[in-house]
Image 1 (cartoon, rainbow, N blue to C red):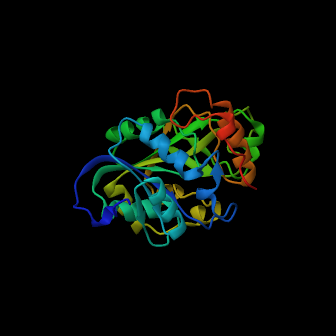
Image 2: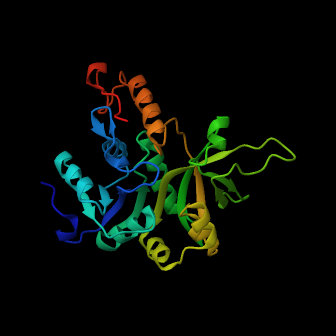
Length: 271
């Protein structure tokens, strides 16, 4: 049985990863527990975090007893939270209860997120400029279907490397030149103070319209530092994405990785 972190003495940890998970995703209810191979989706995300070298802890944050129960069965540290508008609001509640120098929000639908990318976000938090409250990883998009997919959030950058805008629509519009499209990854870094500020800010019209939480900082005049990282994975937003992730998992089974397994052990995702 995994001890409740809230019941433990408050000790300062350097950087910890928090994986926000909820049951009621409109596009894919129960997604964190959807099977990918012989483990639930959230287990794969947790494994990637455990492989990062700069973290001092990893926990799942959820308001759902089913997710909490599976975490305890798997030996994954878990914290129950209240209901929240976004994953970052959930992470902010955890930050108020678990002391650390910084918090890495790793979305629970990124089963192949690179541990090196998590470490890169952790390192970038040491170099934030005044007025920049978050680090958000991104990668280039080279698939036309992904550019048009409203489940894939695109970002455009300013000259200094901060985000100008996030959108589910293809931005920028290719009127005068062929643009390079950039995908926002579900990988964010914050200081504790930044998360306290996030919780105090109201949702603006852009965040409510697009459903992209980092727009909260931008709408209120704060910077979000965008960090380029290598990413060859699949974000799981829908059951169809889960099927693609299963194929990718099968292609990686021969890698020397804790998550590797034989073909006979890999069960296709239930639809």
